[in-house]
Amino acid sequence: MDLNILCYLIPALFMFCCGVYGFITRKNMIAILISLELMLNAVDINFVVFNRFLFPGQMEGMFFTLFAIAIAAAETALAIAIICNIFRVAKDIDVREITKMKF
Image 1: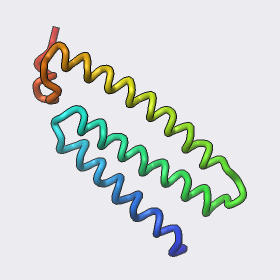
Image 2: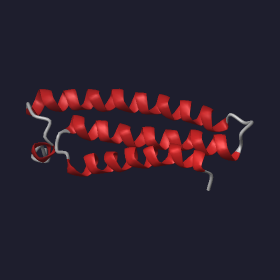
Image 3: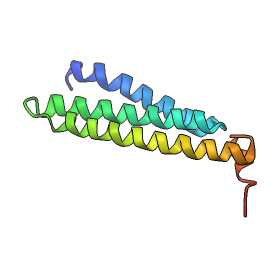
Image 4: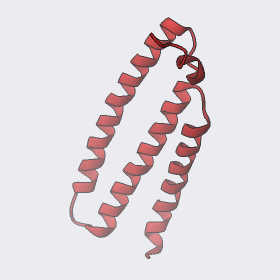
């Protein structure tokens, strides 16, 4: 494998692993959302890197990454709106406390 591709894949792998660790260990919804965004950004880096090294003259990976970033922005806005509504009702955004909100 080319050394240049490893210079991009290793930081993306580290970002993804940090995101998984944060997603599993955090109890705060905002921290979980940040960890999820970290994982999505690592995947976007991989899209661009594999497009650049496998198909150097084409731009499909870049366009797909831009589309994924737009979807992630919409998902983040929706998640923050849901978290704000949960905070209004429960006065807490701890995941353990939210499971008590059963109707």
